[in-house]
Length: 96
Image 1 (cartoon, rainbow, N blue to C red):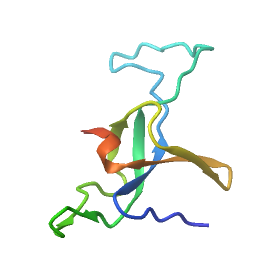
Image 2 (cartoon, rainbow, N blue to C red):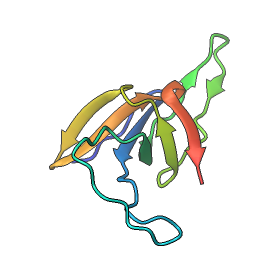
Image 3 (tube, helix red, strand yellow):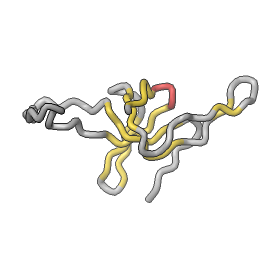
Image 4 (cartoon, rainbow, N blue to C red):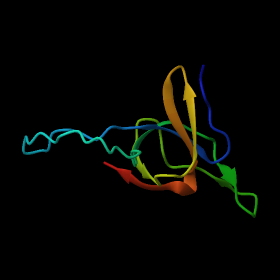
């Protein structure tokens, strides 16, 4: 099954934080895991129209890594994988 977002929606998949720092220090796993704020873009909707009828495109593509609000969007599960669908306005930043 495939999910294709509509309008200005973006389909995101959570990315687990790395357990090793750049210096090689192993970070322990804690029991208090919060939802990830770092996501990978899986699919992007076609965009929406502004109040003047002009097309507003979304400048994200599948594979981009982004930060999003911790509790924004809706969670869906497909074939055992959890995804989050958010409006483009709730994507806070692109991470490179």
